[in-house]
Length: 320
Image 1 (cartoon, rainbow, N blue to C red):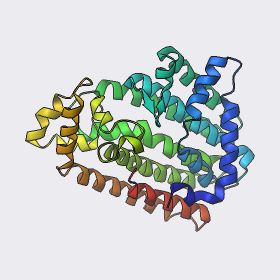
Image 2 (cartoon, one colour):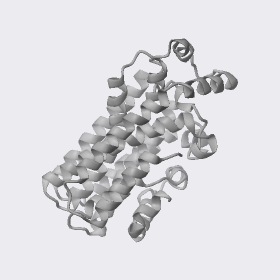
Image 3 (tube, rainbow, N blue to C red):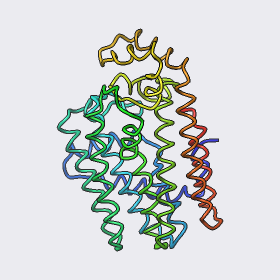
Image 4 (cartoon, rainbow, N blue to C red):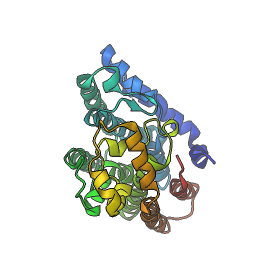
């Protein structure tokens, strides 16, 4: 079953958000519009807006209000991707050339900034002050996560705690906030939107760990970027941390650099796959998913709750 089937009843509302995203990146500046559209047309799962919509279903659901939150969260996510590609010097994103590759770093950085600004503009329709506090805090943490990723490149002595803190800021937080802000916009009680925040956080951690596993186990065609690309760029992910515990592999991993020959990198990936690194990474991902599902137990039965549960389980079984 495809992910979209798990929330097919939201099809009309998701299409509404997609239309609004196109309006959001419109600009009188042709270059800015073209660069923004370049990323938008590359597609994406739109999982953050989906979480916004599903969480809002636990309260007062008004698509004309809720869609603004979904657009804002997707724009923030897109902006972070644009900035990521500059930091990583990435040429491909979702199988297409990145903005920095199609134009240059300056255009990419200003395009990302533009998306951030438009996101804040869309959030102004939400009257609850707590929503704006939550969003501003998440952007601060996201930026700290970006800096941490730069500082941690090729730092092979980092700890599991370093890794978990980084992916919390880089991925899990925005998914958690998507759930929480959807609920806040739906005017639910604090205990419900805090529970949904925790659900989103645990799902987000599992999601990123799964992504890091797939970077080793999937293919370039499915990933839209070269397999093993994270390690080649110096990003020390969970499978790498576990593989570093193997004495025969540790020295080879520590000598990885961005100009490493393709054959050498392929051999290293093969050897990492022969360790228990993937198995242990998957086990930690499953622990986070279990915690996420536990948070849903406190919500009343609903179609939205079932979809949230199904999405979490899908993430746990994701193969690409």
